[in-house]
Length: 302
Ligand SMILES: Nc1ncnc2c1ncn2[C@@H]1O[C@H](COP(=O)(O)OP(=O)(O)OP(=O)(O)O)[C@@H](O)[C@H]1O
Image 1 (cartoon, rainbow, N blue to C red):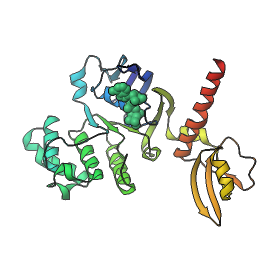
Image 2 (cartoon, helix red, strand yellow):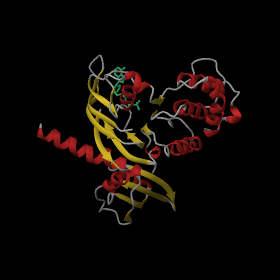
Image 3 (cartoon, rainbow, N blue to C red):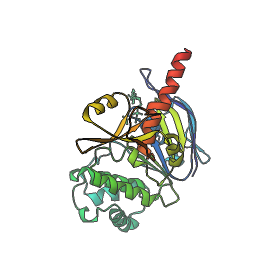
Image 4 (tube, rainbow, N blue to C red):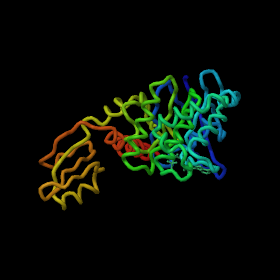
Protein backbone atom coordinates (compact mmCIF):
# COMPACT_ATOMS: atom_id res chain seq x y z
CA UNK A 1 0.00 0.00 0.00
CA UNK A 2 1.42 3.32 -1.08
CA UNK A 3 -0.06 6.56 0.25
CA UNK A 4 0.40 9.81 -1.65
CA UNK A 5 -0.59 13.04 0.06
CA UNK A 6 -0.99 15.76 -2.56
CA UNK A 7 -1.18 19.48 -1.85
CA UNK A 8 -3.17 18.85 1.30
CA UNK A 9 -4.43 21.92 3.14
CA UNK A 10 -6.78 22.45 6.07
CA UNK A 11 -8.13 25.74 7.32
CA UNK A 12 -10.52 25.48 10.27
CA UNK A 13 -13.61 27.64 10.62
CA UNK A 14 -12.20 30.66 12.39
CA UNK A 15 -9.23 30.82 10.07
CA UNK A 16 -6.62 28.58 11.76
CA UNK A 17 -4.44 27.00 9.05
CA UNK A 18 -3.59 23.56 10.43
CA UNK A 19 -2.04 22.10 7.24
CA UNK A 20 -0.43 23.97 4.37
CA UNK A 21 0.28 22.44 0.95
CA UNK A 22 1.45 19.13 2.39
CA UNK A 23 3.05 16.66 -0.04
CA UNK A 24 4.23 13.30 1.23
CA UNK A 25 4.73 9.72 -0.01
CA UNK A 26 4.39 6.86 2.43
CA UNK A 27 5.43 3.30 1.54
CA UNK A 28 4.43 0.11 3.39
CA UNK A 29 6.08 -0.52 6.76
CA UNK A 30 6.18 1.76 9.77
CA UNK A 31 6.23 5.50 9.14
CA UNK A 32 6.88 8.02 11.93
CA UNK A 33 5.14 11.38 11.91
CA UNK A 34 6.91 13.64 14.36
CA UNK A 35 6.10 17.17 15.44
CA UNK A 36 5.41 19.36 18.46
CA UNK A 37 1.92 19.92 19.90
CA UNK A 38 -0.22 21.83 17.44
CA UNK A 39 1.92 20.88 14.40
CA UNK A 40 -1.11 19.45 12.58
CA UNK A 41 -0.56 15.71 13.14
CA UNK A 42 -4.04 14.96 14.49
CA UNK A 43 -5.62 17.01 11.71
CA UNK A 44 -3.73 14.91 9.16
CA UNK A 45 -4.70 11.63 10.88
CA UNK A 46 -8.35 12.67 11.00
CA UNK A 47 -8.35 13.56 7.31
CA UNK A 48 -6.70 10.22 6.48
CA UNK A 49 -9.33 8.35 8.46
CA UNK A 50 -12.18 10.26 6.76
CA UNK A 51 -13.30 11.94 9.98
CA UNK A 52 -12.57 15.38 8.55
CA UNK A 53 -12.43 16.85 5.09
CA UNK A 54 -9.43 18.76 3.79
CA UNK A 55 -9.87 22.33 2.55
CA UNK A 56 -7.69 21.57 -0.47
CA UNK A 57 -5.71 18.71 -1.98
CA UNK A 58 -6.29 14.98 -1.65
CA UNK A 59 -4.76 11.67 -0.59
CA UNK A 60 -4.35 8.56 -2.76
CA UNK A 61 -4.25 5.12 -1.15
CA UNK A 62 -2.74 3.19 -4.08
CA UNK A 63 -5.24 4.26 -6.76
CA UNK A 64 -8.10 5.06 -4.40
CA UNK A 65 -8.77 8.79 -4.06
CA UNK A 66 -9.87 10.10 -0.68
CA UNK A 67 -12.26 12.54 -2.30
CA UNK A 68 -14.08 9.80 -4.27
CA UNK A 69 -13.50 6.27 -2.95
CA UNK A 70 -14.44 6.76 0.68
CA UNK A 71 -16.16 3.41 1.22
CA UNK A 72 -13.27 1.37 -0.19
CA UNK A 73 -10.75 3.39 1.82
CA UNK A 74 -12.77 3.04 5.04
CA UNK A 75 -12.67 -0.76 4.71
CA UNK A 76 -8.85 -0.69 4.55
CA UNK A 77 -8.32 1.44 7.68
CA UNK A 78 -7.57 0.67 11.30
CA UNK A 79 -7.34 3.68 13.62
CA UNK A 80 -6.28 4.26 17.21
CA UNK A 81 -7.30 7.85 17.97
CA UNK A 82 -5.49 10.02 20.49
CA UNK A 83 -8.53 10.13 22.76
CA UNK A 84 -9.43 6.43 22.44
CA UNK A 85 -12.10 5.23 24.85
CA UNK A 86 -14.67 2.50 24.92
CA UNK A 87 -18.03 4.15 24.64
CA UNK A 88 -20.35 1.46 26.01
CA UNK A 89 -20.32 -0.94 28.90
CA UNK A 90 -18.23 -3.73 27.40
CA UNK A 91 -15.94 -6.32 28.85
CA UNK A 92 -12.51 -6.32 27.14
CA UNK A 93 -13.36 -9.35 24.97
CA UNK A 94 -16.85 -8.00 24.15
CA UNK A 95 -15.39 -4.75 22.94
CA UNK A 96 -13.05 -6.60 20.57
CA UNK A 97 -15.87 -8.86 19.44
CA UNK A 98 -17.91 -5.75 18.63
CA UNK A 99 -14.92 -4.18 16.79
CA UNK A 100 -14.47 -7.40 14.80
CA UNK A 101 -18.15 -7.16 13.80
CA UNK A 102 -17.59 -3.59 12.60
CA UNK A 103 -14.58 -4.81 10.61
CA UNK A 104 -16.93 -7.21 8.81
CA UNK A 105 -15.70 -10.45 10.38
CA UNK A 106 -18.40 -13.13 10.55
CA UNK A 107 -19.62 -14.20 13.98
CA UNK A 108 -18.31 -17.79 14.01
CA UNK A 109 -14.73 -16.65 13.31
CA UNK A 110 -14.73 -13.91 15.93
CA UNK A 111 -14.21 -15.93 19.15
CA UNK A 112 -10.87 -17.34 18.10
CA UNK A 113 -9.72 -14.07 16.59
CA UNK A 114 -10.61 -12.08 19.70
CA UNK A 115 -8.58 -14.49 21.87
CA UNK A 116 -5.66 -14.22 19.45
CA UNK A 117 -5.78 -10.41 19.61
CA UNK A 118 -6.04 -10.41 23.41
CA UNK A 119 -2.95 -12.61 23.61
CA UNK A 120 -1.06 -10.45 21.12
CA UNK A 121 -1.52 -7.31 23.25
CA UNK A 122 -1.06 -9.11 26.59
CA UNK A 123 -4.67 -8.73 27.77
CA UNK A 124 -5.85 -12.33 27.69
CA UNK A 125 -5.86 -12.54 31.50
CA UNK A 126 -7.93 -9.34 31.62
CA UNK A 127 -10.50 -10.42 29.04
CA UNK A 128 -13.46 -10.41 31.46
CA UNK A 129 -12.71 -7.00 33.01
CA UNK A 130 -14.79 -3.96 32.12
CA UNK A 131 -12.94 -2.19 29.33
CA UNK A 132 -13.47 1.27 30.80
CA UNK A 133 -11.96 0.15 34.14
CA UNK A 134 -8.65 -1.03 32.64
CA UNK A 135 -5.50 1.00 33.39
CA UNK A 136 -4.44 3.70 30.90
CA UNK A 137 -1.79 1.44 29.35
CA UNK A 138 -4.16 -1.53 29.08
CA UNK A 139 -6.81 0.65 27.43
CA UNK A 140 -4.27 1.78 24.88
CA UNK A 141 -3.36 -1.87 24.21
CA UNK A 142 -7.04 -2.72 23.78
CA UNK A 143 -7.13 0.25 21.39
CA UNK A 144 -4.35 -1.13 19.22
CA UNK A 145 -6.04 -4.56 19.22
CA UNK A 146 -9.28 -3.02 17.85
CA UNK A 147 -7.25 -1.07 15.26
CA UNK A 148 -5.52 -4.18 13.85
CA UNK A 149 -8.42 -6.63 14.01
CA UNK A 150 -9.33 -7.81 10.51
CA UNK A 151 -5.82 -7.11 9.15
CA UNK A 152 -6.33 -3.58 7.76
CA UNK A 153 -3.82 -2.46 5.12
CA UNK A 154 -3.44 0.95 6.72
CA UNK A 155 -3.04 1.34 10.48
CA UNK A 156 -3.05 4.85 11.91
CA UNK A 157 -1.95 5.40 15.48
CA UNK A 158 -2.16 8.90 16.97
CA UNK A 159 0.12 9.73 19.93
CA UNK A 160 -0.29 6.30 21.54
CA UNK A 161 2.24 6.63 24.35
CA UNK A 162 1.33 10.06 25.75
CA UNK A 163 0.70 9.72 29.49
CA UNK A 164 1.95 6.12 29.73
CA UNK A 165 4.59 5.06 32.24
CA UNK A 166 7.95 3.90 30.81
CA UNK A 167 7.14 0.20 31.13
CA UNK A 168 3.84 0.53 29.27
CA UNK A 169 5.49 2.76 26.68
CA UNK A 170 8.09 0.08 25.90
CA UNK A 171 5.40 -2.58 25.83
CA UNK A 172 3.34 -0.56 23.37
CA UNK A 173 6.36 0.07 21.12
CA UNK A 174 7.09 -3.66 21.06
CA UNK A 175 3.52 -4.42 19.97
CA UNK A 176 3.88 -1.86 17.16
CA UNK A 177 7.15 -3.30 15.94
CA UNK A 178 5.65 -6.81 16.00
CA UNK A 179 2.78 -5.76 13.75
CA UNK A 180 5.10 -3.75 11.50
CA UNK A 181 6.57 -7.03 10.22
CA UNK A 182 3.37 -7.49 8.23
CA UNK A 183 2.62 -6.00 4.85
CA UNK A 184 0.56 -3.10 6.25
CA UNK A 185 1.42 0.59 6.24
CA UNK A 186 1.54 1.86 9.81
CA UNK A 187 1.55 5.59 10.46
CA UNK A 188 2.63 6.50 13.95
CA UNK A 189 2.09 10.10 14.97
CA UNK A 190 3.93 11.30 18.05
CA UNK A 191 5.65 14.20 19.75
CA UNK A 192 7.78 11.75 21.74
CA UNK A 193 11.00 11.15 19.85
CA UNK A 194 11.64 7.85 21.63
CA UNK A 195 8.55 6.40 19.94
CA UNK A 196 10.31 6.65 16.59
CA UNK A 197 12.32 3.49 16.92
CA UNK A 198 14.55 1.78 14.44
CA UNK A 199 11.45 0.00 13.16
CA UNK A 200 10.36 3.25 11.41
CA UNK A 201 11.67 3.12 7.86
CA UNK A 202 11.00 6.81 7.30
CA UNK A 203 10.22 9.82 9.40
CA UNK A 204 8.49 13.08 8.55
CA UNK A 205 8.77 16.18 10.69
CA UNK A 206 5.80 18.50 10.74
CA UNK A 207 5.77 22.02 12.17
CA UNK A 208 3.10 24.69 11.82
CA UNK A 209 1.24 22.49 9.35
CA UNK A 210 4.19 22.18 6.98
CA UNK A 211 6.59 19.37 6.14
CA UNK A 212 10.04 20.26 7.46
CA UNK A 213 11.96 17.01 7.02
CA UNK A 214 11.39 13.67 5.36
CA UNK A 215 13.89 10.84 5.34
CA UNK A 216 15.20 7.84 7.24
CA UNK A 217 15.93 8.09 10.99
CA UNK A 218 19.60 7.69 9.96
CA UNK A 219 19.41 10.73 7.70
CA UNK A 220 17.82 12.73 10.50
CA UNK A 221 20.67 11.69 12.79
CA UNK A 222 23.19 12.71 10.15
CA UNK A 223 21.93 16.30 10.36
CA UNK A 224 22.97 16.52 14.01
CA UNK A 225 26.39 14.86 13.70
CA UNK A 226 29.09 17.15 15.11
CA UNK A 227 26.49 19.30 16.90
CA UNK A 228 26.09 17.34 20.14
CA UNK A 229 28.48 17.86 23.04
CA UNK A 230 29.06 16.38 26.45
CA UNK A 231 30.72 18.47 29.14
CA UNK A 232 31.23 18.72 32.89
CA UNK A 233 30.15 22.00 34.48
CA UNK A 234 29.67 23.53 37.92
CA UNK A 235 26.18 24.62 39.00
CA UNK A 236 26.73 28.34 38.22
CA UNK A 237 28.14 27.54 34.75
CA UNK A 238 25.13 25.31 34.17
CA UNK A 239 22.72 28.18 34.81
CA UNK A 240 24.50 30.24 32.12
CA UNK A 241 24.60 27.34 29.61
CA UNK A 242 20.91 26.58 30.11
CA UNK A 243 20.00 30.02 28.82
CA UNK A 244 22.20 29.61 25.75
CA UNK A 245 21.82 26.04 24.48
CA UNK A 246 19.19 23.29 24.58
CA UNK A 247 20.28 20.86 27.34
CA UNK A 248 19.34 17.25 26.58
CA UNK A 249 20.70 15.42 29.60
CA UNK A 250 21.88 16.36 33.10
CA UNK A 251 23.54 13.91 35.51
CA UNK A 252 24.90 15.11 38.90
CA UNK A 253 28.55 14.09 39.28
CA UNK A 254 31.41 14.98 41.68
CA UNK A 255 29.98 18.27 42.91
CA UNK A 256 28.97 19.41 39.43
CA UNK A 257 26.94 18.21 36.48
CA UNK A 258 27.68 16.12 33.43
CA UNK A 259 25.46 17.49 30.66
CA UNK A 260 24.72 17.00 26.98
CA UNK A 261 23.87 19.99 24.84
CA UNK A 262 23.09 20.68 21.20
CA UNK A 263 25.12 23.51 19.70
CA UNK A 264 26.89 24.42 16.47
CA UNK A 265 30.09 25.05 18.48
CA UNK A 266 31.07 25.26 22.16
CA UNK A 267 34.65 26.52 22.05
CA UNK A 268 34.51 28.37 25.38
CA UNK A 269 34.44 25.27 27.63
CA UNK A 270 37.54 23.23 28.31
CA UNK A 271 36.17 19.77 29.15
CA UNK A 272 34.05 19.28 26.06
CA UNK A 273 33.77 16.27 23.80
CA UNK A 274 31.69 15.76 20.69
CA UNK A 275 29.36 12.75 21.01
CA UNK A 276 27.35 10.63 18.59
CA UNK A 277 23.80 12.05 18.29
CA UNK A 278 20.66 10.08 19.04
CA UNK A 279 17.26 10.82 17.51
CA UNK A 280 16.25 13.11 20.34
CA UNK A 281 19.37 15.22 19.79
CA UNK A 282 18.58 15.32 16.07
CA UNK A 283 15.00 16.46 16.73
CA UNK A 284 16.16 19.25 19.04
CA UNK A 285 18.84 20.27 16.54
CA UNK A 286 16.23 20.46 13.81
CA UNK A 287 13.63 22.35 15.83
CA UNK A 288 16.03 24.77 17.53
CA UNK A 289 18.62 25.39 14.83
CA UNK A 290 17.67 24.40 11.31
CA UNK A 291 14.11 25.73 11.44
CA UNK A 292 14.99 28.72 13.59
CA UNK A 293 17.81 29.74 11.21
CA UNK A 294 15.46 29.40 8.26
CA UNK A 295 12.87 31.51 10.05
CA UNK A 296 15.51 34.12 10.97
CA UNK A 297 16.66 34.23 7.34
CA UNK A 298 13.09 34.66 6.15
CA UNK A 299 12.51 37.42 8.71
CA UNK A 300 15.66 39.21 7.51
CA UNK A 301 14.46 39.03 3.92
CA UNK A 302 11.10 40.61 4.80
N1 LIG B 1 -11.54 21.95 15.43
C1 LIG B 1 -10.59 22.89 15.39
N2 LIG B 1 -10.92 24.20 15.21
C2 LIG B 1 -9.98 25.16 15.16
N3 LIG B 1 -8.65 24.92 15.27
C3 LIG B 1 -8.26 23.65 15.47
C4 LIG B 1 -9.20 22.57 15.54
N4 LIG B 1 -8.52 21.42 15.73
C5 LIG B 1 -7.21 21.74 15.79
N5 LIG B 1 -7.05 23.09 15.62
C6 LIG B 1 -5.78 23.83 15.59
O1 LIG B 1 -5.03 23.39 14.47
C7 LIG B 1 -3.64 23.27 14.81
C8 LIG B 1 -3.17 21.83 14.59
O2 LIG B 1 -3.79 21.01 15.57
P1 LIG B 1 -3.60 19.42 15.62
O3 LIG B 1 -4.43 18.89 16.74
O4 LIG B 1 -3.79 18.86 14.28
O5 LIG B 1 -2.05 19.32 16.00
P2 LIG B 1 -1.21 18.12 16.62
O6 LIG B 1 0.12 18.13 15.95
O7 LIG B 1 -1.98 16.86 16.55
O8 LIG B 1 -1.05 18.55 18.12
P3 LIG B 1 -1.38 17.72 19.46
O9 LIG B 1 -0.19 16.88 19.68
O10 LIG B 1 -1.51 18.82 20.48
O11 LIG B 1 -2.65 16.99 19.21
C9 LIG B 1 -3.51 23.72 16.26
O12 LIG B 1 -3.14 25.09 16.25
C10 LIG B 1 -4.91 23.54 16.81
O13 LIG B 1 -5.16 24.46 17.86
